[in-house]
Image (cartoon, rainbow, N blue to C red; front, side, top):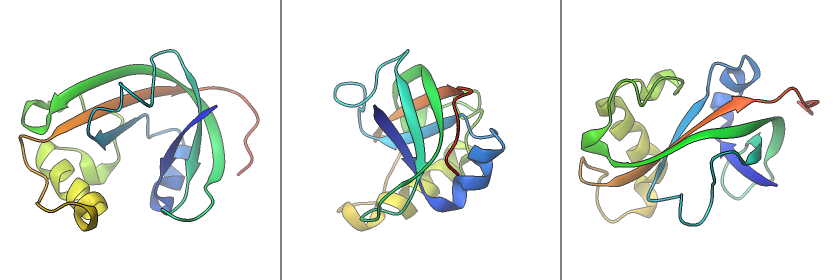
Length: 123
């Protein structure tokens, strides 16, 4: 089963089922995710073993330039990514060390939306 791994500071949003959207830099549709696919939702830092929180099913995938993202696209995202400008800042914080340039409006992202399943959690 594929995984949507989130940083640990989003754990509470997942446990409370408030986070139903994540935005990933690049086109993740081609290699990672499919609509209707069940996924594990985990938290953990890069390089550490992720911790399973719950399960979900992907309901929507969209590939867009950051400059094309709307507030509706960001519904269900974490508060630190509630607007396109805030999203850019968050993506720069997450990906900045791996990129040779700051994330900008021309960069392509994948908006992944899911709904939670009622499978047993291992919090």
